[in-house]
Structure formats: C-alpha cells, structure tokens
Image (cartoon, rainbow, N blue to C red):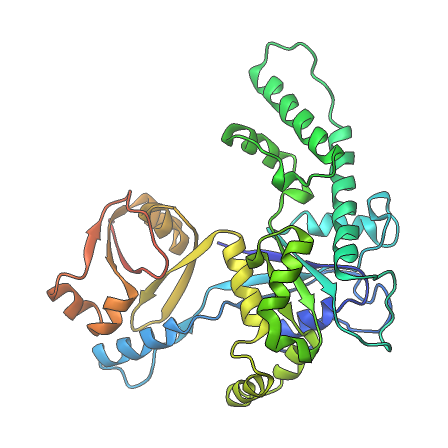
Length: 367
C-alpha cells in the first residue's frame, strides 16, 4: 500500500531543503524567495529498517547463496507542496494549487521555522506556533467552505441522507469553534461519511521543527516543549535541521554516523521523521525472506493475514490458505525457517490471524 505525506508550511521555512535531503539529491528547486516550488515535487523515500540487513544475512547462510539477497524496504512518498500564505482558502498566493495538492496526501507534515538565519527572508513567518496556526487556520477555513456548499436535504425519509447531513452539521459546528476535523468526535458510522467529504483537517499531522544545529542534542526536550505549545502529542513533533540533513546527504554512511556523533545525536532527524510519518498513520510492516529478496511490506495495524497477503498480490488474498508466521527475533536467533520450524517457533495461522509488526511470513496460496 502507498503512504504519502505532504510537506507544508509558510514560504522559506525550509520545506524544499528538507525535501531535497529526504531524496539525497536535488529534486526540488530551492531558492531564497517565496513560491520557488510551484508544482508539487514527489519523491519516494525508504523507511529505515535495520532488520532487513539481518534477514538478508540469515537468508544468505541458510540458502547457501554467494551474495546477499537484495533488500527492499517499505517506502514513504513525500510531496513538497508550494508555500502557503494567509488567504490561501480564498485563492491568495498559490492557494488553490496548495489546497488541491494537500487534499491528495494521507498525512500532513507541517514544517515550522525555529532556526535563526538573517539571510533567509521570513516572508510571513513569525514563530513556530503562529506559523503552524496560520496554515491550520487556512485549512479549517477551506474545510468550512466545503461544508457550506453542502445542501440541506430537508425532512427526507432517506436514512443515509439524514446521517450525511448530521455529520455535515457536526463538522461545521466544530470547525466554527476552531476545532480541526480530526479532533471532532464521530462514531464509526459517522467517520465513514466524513471521509467522503475529504476534510483537509481530518488528516493526521506531524510537525517538523526546523531548528539550528546546536539544538539537535536537546531535541527530546525541544519536542516536548513545543508539543505542549501546539497541543499535540510529543510523538507528533520532530526536531530536525534541514540544513544539517542536507549536508549529511552527501556523506557516506560511516561519515554520517561520525558527524551525528559529533553533534551529540545518534539518529538522523530524517530517519525519525520518516518513522514518525509511518507510525502517525497507524502503519506497520511484515517481512518476507527468500533468495529473490528480503522485503518489508506496509500494512495497516490490526489487519488480518488474508488481507495482508493481498498487499503482495491481489490473487493471494482470493486464494489464501494459511500463513506460516515466525517472530523476527526467533527467525534470527534460530537461523531461518528450517530450524525455527523444527523448534516449533513457526505457527500456521488462518485468515483471521491479526498481523503484528515485524512478523516474518510465508503465505500458502492455492491454485
């Protein structure tokens, strides 16, 4: 399944610099003036997963291979979207383009400016909280406009139409009070209806604090402080220096590790950003291992084995028989399928088995 995250924020807060670092090459046009990015730039970024390397090593040994099998990580699609200004919901600046592009992504990454650089034009940026609220306000206003266009079906006997209008009314009331759609309480039935309305503020959010190099060693404290300011969970905030990440992108893995160590951190901001984007959408991965490849597959947390098999191929879901499942730790500890089976560490599960993160799986499919 695909995962897409839109990178948004006011002009010149570091969106395109961050995007370029994500891709480890210049794919977005970075310039020191507003609206340098006009059309959205899209890039597919691997989700860091050290488990794949260990899976490859075990597979090489157990299968008697000369070389390690290829590693295929899960991926996250990032979309660099044009900078927004106040009035975007009315078409100001590149508002219409901004809103149409953001409507298509699964989650939103708000980039806010915490760095100090007098040479970079602020162009509307004030402080992280105000910058975030400016973008959030525009999205709320755009959502409110969408709801205003809906027509009251009146005293209709159609239950579906009545439910639909109840949801519209509930969302309008909440947005009118400044509450984003994602925080408006809806039951499961109402959530299905709300999804059809494509509310911009219903999307999960991450907030990337684009900070100075000197702040990175205190990232945990900074994230906690600003999470309270933004009124979100700490897991939704990541402190990152787009400038440093851009510099890291040109280094070898060994050089990157040393550079990070010198900064007093042990994981790049981009790795944490990608992982948080993944978890924000409630996604996990299961693993497959064979001579052809070792691979991480993306699924929604809580889905069953039969539906998970369909991520590999739609026919798998239709012809599903069972799933042989081994925990990653046992798979590595006992050196692959053969020994793990002999020791009873592999379980044959039916279609209703709920997948857990990092399950190593071999699906049995009928003809």
